[in-house]
Length: 580
Image (cartoon, rainbow, N blue to C red):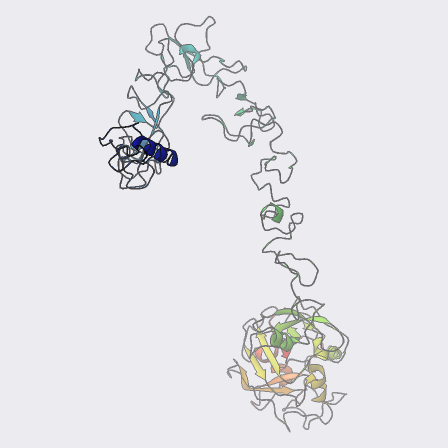
């Protein structure tokens, strides 16, 4: 039988490196190394971080708020955010802070030194927003204080006593007053200066002309390009005065008085961000049309042409985008010679709402401009003729050939207060007629006076042949709309074409020889003369065309205007004739 020692040796060999410590801390490997049978002490647990902000409760002044901890940004919220025991105050900017406030030790409203504090309130005891105090232990010394003869810099401008132009020493013993040339520019000051003691050379006792005797670049005539006498500052010596000078100095035109190459008259260099000629206008608007170039963030698509910019009138189909819309304007019917309408009715049909005015039309083979009336009786009327009381015997009996000549125009579309007969007289066809008396505006429209579209010139010819129709056998055309009111000598609103005078020769012969006296040629209305109505004296009282009653004189009646006493005798009273 083996001994106990041998058995233990076997166990030690088999279990080398695998000693076991039970929960009580006892050494149970029986190796005889540790025979302690006592319990070991455990280390203390770390402080908790309840809000998970990385700071334990022993340093976090509010361990229930993750936004509050050492190093957090202080905010204006009534809370000590950074745990420095100071609420809403910091040495660095905080939201909504007014700072930085400077320490004001002497209570004069000005702070000195670099000690700053940011706060949320408007004020803090012993702190100020103002800086520049050159002695924060003396409340009498600070920016804006009065300089006096005391051997110190009272107003903190680094100038002491006599060297400071702001010296006020009237009550100082030995002080003197005068008007010296303090800046040596050759002009005595216009404001008095004080000295703490009499100067070596006496000062002038009368005011000079220098408006800033502490600046050698400011004196009368300094801005020689602007004035030979005005006291201005010209710091850069370019001949132009500073546009924003110190108080008391006359303003000049130089927008940068520290740059000699910037002043009025300098050639502008565009797009460099510098207003070189000081005209106050944008440096990104080279063509001076009020719009910056697109390349510079503006809206002008061509900054070399002042007629091209947003809002400009875009000329149709000229290949140029004048209004910078991105495309050339289309040509609307009637606007240009290149895109005429057929007549005024066509303009209205293609452009509803188009106003009265001049439009290009192409009735058949020739383009020309015509006046279009878009206001009376639904609009779409083409002006063919104007007969005016203009002291010119245009449409008289002896000149009636003007009504028959197809190629002859009379007057101008631009002078509608004078006699005018447009090319439309022979080229624009229609079935309706409109007559407008001007300038009073009384008008009458007659629809379907022709069975088929026909020109006005041809219509008058057809109604005036030897077998023609006069009042005696056909009557007139009934007015379909208008503002004529029968009164005075006019007894009918009917329209007649080349009627025979009913108190003259009998029959109805208006042939080529125009034998019957006083027969009219063209349009007329029924008027009462000696025989009353029916139509009595169309050639004298109510015609529009020429009559033989006054063969070589202009008829001043102008259609239905005279019987109705519309502007009788007025210069250029007129009747306008339209077709549609």
